[in-house]
Image 1 (cartoon, rainbow, N blue to C red):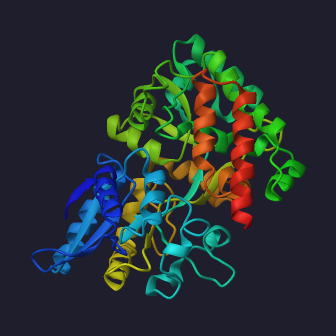
Image 2 (image 1 turned 90 degrees about the horizontal axis):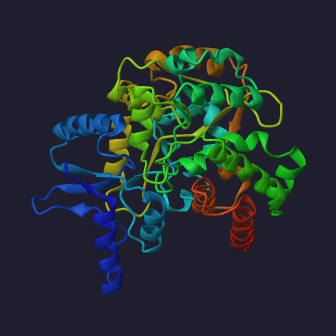
Length: 422
């Protein structure tokens, strides 16, 4: 089992493009006759998920000595680099689909609905992972059901009751109380990490009317409403709710800040909580539904989460499917889901959410809290995530105004929507 970064792989694939000699897939055979399969995990080398993948992969290779699964860590720019590789017909054998197995990657991936483990596919994922023919294209390691992450100790020290945070006004009061107590309200990381985009995704359900969302679905970008949404980010910056090292901070810094109690909140997937516990296992962290901007009901954000697909034109498709089947074994799928910190995407895997079990049962399993989809995946055309991140980052870094960010979004939206319609 080898490991190197996606950046190094991209450099190699770029050289192949320049030489005019492209392979259909970067896997193949090693010098020792082994089948070598490249697996782009989109995980940092120190993430709990990557550690589980290393252990499970070692067990698979022990059972299959003629196979070498080459695990790759993910750089901050994983998504655009994957676009380059797919355009160059140099796809990895296996890769993390980061929420886009159907809408973006399905044309490159082998359908998996006939695999033995497919009978355990969680139906809750059907609307976002299956096409009209019932095909799906990635092994769903987890379903995403996330909200507002918080450090309970920090809130208690500031006299804030988490149960009372059911509106944006209540959250604003809590942020001010936390700040007055010397703690940063929200932990965020700079543009390369993507947390600015997550912030938009998490608050967007309360930022648009149903009519505005319907118009967006039909290709009419709602620039004024989006400027108002970015205005919330600008206010967070102006009001001192964000960390002063935002532009240089990383996802690891976000996790450490929550773990150490130097920040109170984060809007992110629960993988951030799992990572935070690697820094401080005793940190009292949890999550709650997101307080809405519009005065409606609090909600969770969800959909396809960690998932892995197989390149349909790869040199070792059947071996790759066997590897996915190994990952899908109940004990392995359960361990991976626990490392992510979200419910498993297969019904025969056991949810082991540790200290996150209580909020899962209270908000998710009970079905009492609405689950909103990721805004960018439903209402924006394919390819808009980079625009979401960079425009939000510009506002949080005080480098652009909400109106400027919304205008940039409008231009990119029109271009990409017209391309997707052709």
